[in-house]
Image (cartoon, rainbow, N blue to C red; front, side):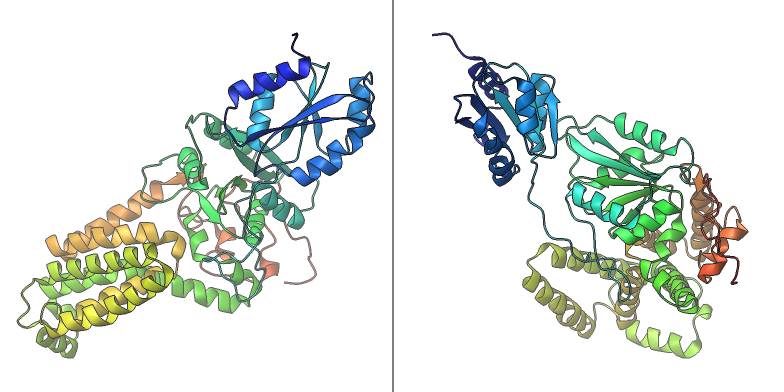
Length: 480
């Protein structure tokens, strides 16, 4: 028996997509025309398939041309299929392929509906004032959140695919005329040049587009809220949204960005400035305090006030561990407790934190294994580092390096390492923008929105550190 065109198409698709969740829905119109819709179960909207495709085609006659069939389709996303590999790719992506008997041509129906959680406030970038919407794992929803805030005709969103097997959608977002010329194309090339099987998260893309991926400092900014993302894009940056990730990326990146929060721009300027200074001081204390304490205790005791020195000496008397080893042990215990509390179930993790902080710490002090100042300094250091959560990975590593250096070499080693660190940061760049901008090199215009937050009328120009095509963002000259 001769096989029909429809059966041949179904067989060709199923020969490639053998998985059981690839379904074939065959139906016949009242005029006797046979159709088949092939889709992936779970990520294709079957209700829309019935309402927008099956119902309109029930009046099709057996000899109706393919052009009439297309006109009857009520789906807003319909395109002509060009080849079998394209049909396979679209079906895997969540869309449906519609085949008609007697026709080699087919249609791709945009009915993708993958499971996604509701838009909610992100867990890290929480704001008392300001919007509470956060990005989710569905890229189309994230693109809609961006388009909701930037309605300009100059907003450009270009979608590319990354990952040889995952075919993950990556959206490059920028404002034409504001973004530095050639930057979007450069970012696109960096993404395209890296061939990897799967892109499960935006951190993969961040590593690919970083000029120095082995650097201890990140070279891409991150945003979990669309208001922060859109503000950075309007400053001239390129934004990147990755399907499956709620964390967006922005380039170029400056270190000062992580000391700023979205809420700074919804509060009074003096309040925002105060908080930024507090964050900076907190990070410095978190990184340097354990090292300075060890250096002073081992090499320069005269740096510690006399009464405080007496307290430290009395609490450290009879301890079996040297001060540097003691501090390293306490820091290691803190890291283990932190890791365990994150990985364990929510309520067990809470109980573990209480046990680790109270029971273990108090028992270790009473047993004469660890001194009280060591626990206080490490605990305070950990709290300080989390005032800037986006830098925790970097600052935690630096704390370890400075602590080991202080215990081995003393204050001289800390000073030399600090000079080396500053030199290293000054040499870092992100797509032509120095990491320490606007301080090194000094850009006076950008100092109004760095560690100091000036009022909105002082921020009439976009950051000069980023070579934007349009430098003016506020044209109201009536107020200062």
